[in-house]
Amino acid sequence: MEINFTTVIDLSGTFAFAISGIRLASGKQIDWFGAYIIGLVTAIGGGTTRDLLLDVTPFWMEDGKYFLTTGVALLATLLFKDKLFRLGNTLFLFDSIGLGLFTIVGISKSLEAGLPFWVCIAMGTITGTVGGVVRDVLLNEVPLLFRKDIYALACVAGGVVYFMCRHFSLPAGLTELVAASTVILIRIIALKFHIHLPILSSITTDTGDNENKS
Image (cartoon, rainbow, N blue to C red):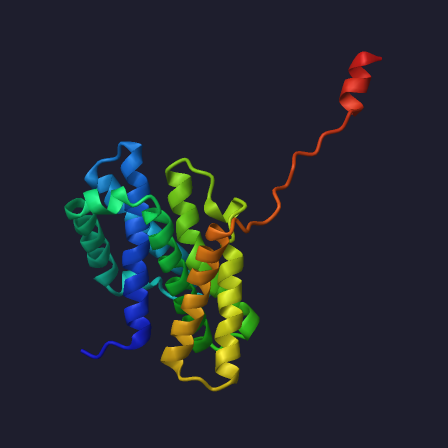
């Protein structure tokens, strides 16, 4: 069976995102099956949302590789948890890899559907981020998408680079690799140099206090 480069990226992203979900679940007193479910929804959440928006059957309903890949991720976590969990940035690393790879998968599948480039970038961002949002909500965490971290914007930047590479007629495989690397590098650089978006401060007024005093 022939496996194209996009499929390799898709399964690699599935593995990376599943690891990130399982890693985060490990600190929540969740059993193995629960950790598997968290890893699975992290891996398929964004792609499912994308496929529903594209009005096609969600990819995991037609191919069992994603369930198997998540199982391999759980097994790898159980076997190498001491090495994986000893690394403080394990969650960040695997989440960033999954983010970059899934962004490209979302863009590629949207292009196949004949959508304009801005929709493809939006679909790539959805594919890359929604799984992490579902993961964080299920584990009672504030989703990374809504924190000050450079997250969705990294996907958008990767999408722009993707179409720039296409404009200059770079090979498809190289285009996907460069764009995915852009997303990952932006995340790493933002963490290293503490680059983030401004936090929206709470908006308060003195109207209520003044009324109570009067």
